[in-house]
Length: 310
Ligand SMILES: Cc1cc2nc3c(=O)[nH]c(=O)nc-3n(C[C@H](O)[C@H](O)[C@H](O)COP(=O)(O)O)c2cc1C
Image (tube, rainbow, N blue to C red):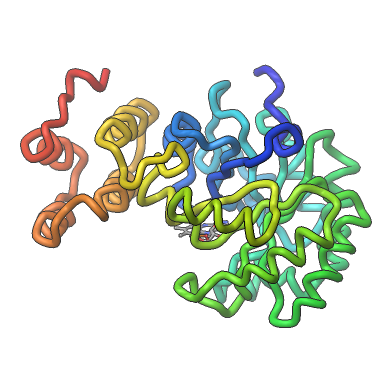
């Protein structure tokens, strides 16, 4: 496989960089290829547990599939220590452009395992993780963080990460305890941008190009990352206000071509149809329980041309 593109080079060469967020279950190969087609510049894999990845061939193949077109791609790991992380990073490095450390997952089980947002209280552990990855692989190492309730802690966290050579970082403008429905802290993101000398990607409630414009204007960041916005409309960075039909067709073709499980396929389509279907249409779509049933429905109700998919 040829060497993959460095996300750092993308961030340094473009004024505004569109990023697809890491999303457990969803930001897999077919969805990443779809997003790249519609103006996304860098894609993240879902969060992968570093210790499981390094110890199990089965986990490696089921958690992470890639190909030459899956580029630029960053693999995101969750780890509680530098050794697990660096071991996993070394195995992944030939197939990706960057290694990202998840410091933001707020779920209770993750906190108990000392991964994800637990790391926001452990700047020294994160420093050691970055140091070990940088000693072992020759591709950029980034972190995805949240803001702290006291922004002085965020500033200190960023300084420490930079002191060991973090290559860029993403900041989700919410604290560990805030829900995604709560407003994004633009001042917190701006502070991170002003503190860091490496590129910064902003994350939180980017649902349209207007939201992206506002984020750039208010924070001065180098890129914006979207999660729920891209699930609902993978073409949002191409300027579409709702998912165009062509994009839905592209997704069906990619998912069936690469292979997908029914649950993920169904959910992606439910997200994409969110603003398109009426309540009654959603109700009947939600009851479909197999890929053939979903395809039949798309054919009869929405005019999907299955022959165009091959
Ligand atoms: C379905 C789903 C799965 C997610 N999985 C991950 C993940 O694997 N790693 C991660 O760092 N964040 C994960 N997140 C958080 C997003 O990357 C992002 O930080 C958060 O949703 C805020 O962005 P948004 O307002 O654009 O949705 C996930 C979010 C969603 C909705």
